[in-house]
Length: 65
Image (cartoon, rainbow, N blue to C red; front, side, top):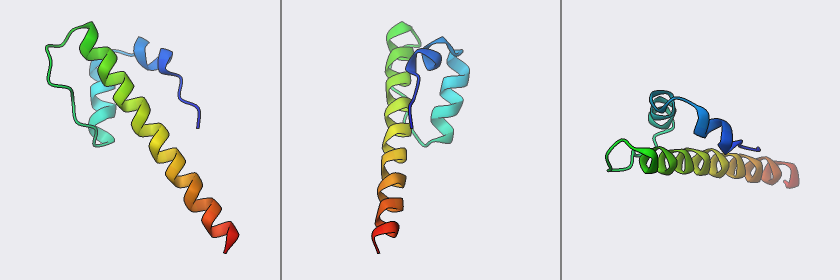
């Protein structure tokens, strides 16, 4: 799954935080500034990529059996 981090960066901070909570991503412990937003976007994008990779590996494992 391709994740467009530039779109996540343009999203409102509140929406990225809500998405992070729904994905069980821990929020960075910083003041809410540009660096915080950037770190949060990176964590959310990484989580989405990681889950997509795991799903693909599970799917491939089922096909090989």
